[in-house]
Image (cartoon, rainbow, N blue to C red; front, side, top):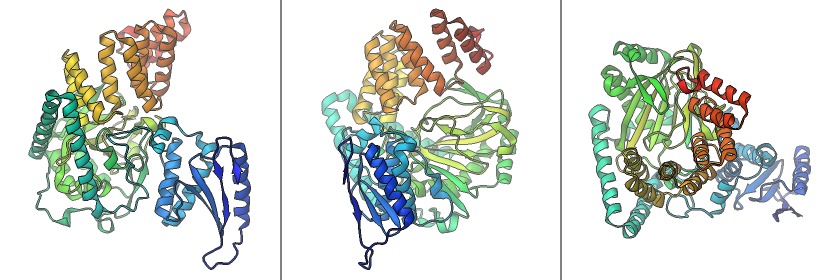
Length: 565
């Protein structure tokens, strides 16, 4: 064995094959052994690895517990890759390979990860080591993306989770008193009301529906497959344990689309006849073209048919851990969005639902630019999605729409609720945000505190609470909250970096403020307000050339941004 500088010992075992014959090492394996030993000597192999097992003609690197099970090997190797920042495993979708081959590929990727991806990230190591709690308990997550958990077990797991949630809420009622109890009851009432309202406009499967409406891969796939992407460093706001954070939570269709380009073109023509071309509304920092499907009844008819035949069964198939039945799914907010040069993009945001989907409605050859990206992957990594394809995910992952520079791109976005699952964290956070906007700062802060008591890693709760503290000129406390967000998100949150810049500027820490703004601009160079603020700070410092460059960038992004002129 070799002892490495971080005190991890690696054992190399030469084992016999299944017939108890002496193992003959393949020349390629010998070459791998040399590489492995070299890596050990310089001390850069993952500290999580328990051992490197050599079998005839192959190498197995065991990250986690000793096992020969392919599913566990896949999970352990994926977790090793995730711990260093990996988010995709594109090589697994190429061709038809079995689980044993997948395990071998992933393990080889994992052993190269220190060189390719760098060291284990702190916030991810904390999760792996169990030093930090996410939602409620420090309980091990269910395996996903390599799990042997089957759907038959899901109801029991869900019931156990809900029991823990109920217990935790009762503990918090004792801690926070009647106000908290009232807020939880209000969450439940609002949830049931929203679910009922959804059924007035969108398809809801009857509870007595049989299994005939469930997605059957052998029948429905028709050449459609799914690429899986890992979440970032922070789990979904609600039900993170049931989701099985962090692996394989973002799903993108590949191969054949789930609806044809001709069908999509008919939908767009229908929406245009219903006046979508002339409508716009504000979302975040940008004005968007498009409209809610509640205002487009003919377009909504098509979507409802798709919910019944394809989309709801598909969501049940993709997320069986949290969707107990097709009958509990509710389409809460659905819009058809139009991107063009006058309405080019969205800001980076989270969706207002436990699950969300984005459906591409325009062929890629009809526009330039555009596309969905997830901030933890980097804005340059746009997910490939041609017309008829979709992305399906938990709603609380930060994402955005890239700028369309030519042509027109339509997408359909939908936020989903689950009738038998109340999102207490999201609802407390949303109500807190409404109270903050109405000036009820003390009540708002209580709601953020309550949400964080359920999920200490609700980053949007921390950001909104920091805004309150900034308003109250409690700069040190505001900075502490925002820096916690940036720790959780590994500084991949342009909004949090922008807020940090504002807080530091107000506190008179100009150099640190410029540093925060600069990091934010690097993540999100298409934010006019951010560029303008950085220009102001650079000008105050006497860096006139850099100041003018920021103003120029601001008006390039938004020609109507008057201050920059």
